[in-house]
Length: 392
Image (tube, rainbow, N blue to C red; front, side, top):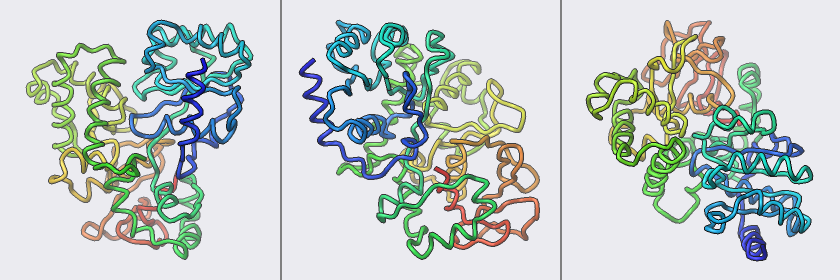
């Protein structure tokens, strides 16, 4: 136990979260079992350590552990938690919980045996905490940690502390909101950098970002998909090839039959692989209203713009990048559907949006909201695209 405390103290001392993550204020920290899900690379470990540092400092009643430690190959989480509670432990932070065999049953055992203990754990976005782990139904509260928003990126780069806004606030008050931002910063000065490398916090590290992101993407497939979905290793190359083909095709409806031929598998397997890639936050699936998986999506897009530049940079089209940015910003709290009659997308079945650039601007239609680029000011139903990056 002392070794875990020494590791905890070292990590807390060397943790420096440069920007306050919005999720920190959204979680009800009074719950006894909290799951923090997110794709690889978005900062789940830093998030747990920052919580420990801000709320507990050096208080030994809080402890961070990582189930990557070989210690947990010989001992279950529940046994360890018992020792921790007996030493006065109250809050146990468990990183990468899915690396532990029978992890969900172990968490349930902790919940039942130690009512005085709070557990906060991190896991992959591929995990289905309630659907695939019935023992956690009704006791776990699940949250998603995302990569940096454009707002968080600007705050980090400029030292500002701009707040987030709901979609309704942006639609109703965009002119006023923009007037509060522009005197302090020129958002378009930072927009292209964000599109290229601003979503994943590891751009702050002194390593080649694209190489680091490609390594992370491979880990998403090799660990988050194969390990958690228990897919045999021999199918790894098929999933990677599928991801590459989807990326190269750009945002479009997939030709499932052709993809099945290309990776030498069945149509049903292709659709399952597409779902796994979406769960891993590598792609987004856009459907017509009223439809969803297992039907074929109307459009498959990369999950965020950073992935587009990393996987096939010579083929990146500006319109595709801007539409991917928009869908990614909406994805957290809203449903995005295929557009119709001049609209790029329909959001929540209510708002019709067109992602508009200087080359494709038309006479504004009163029933369409125009998310425009590149512009910093707004007018009526014409709103700068970058402002939608302030939604979390």
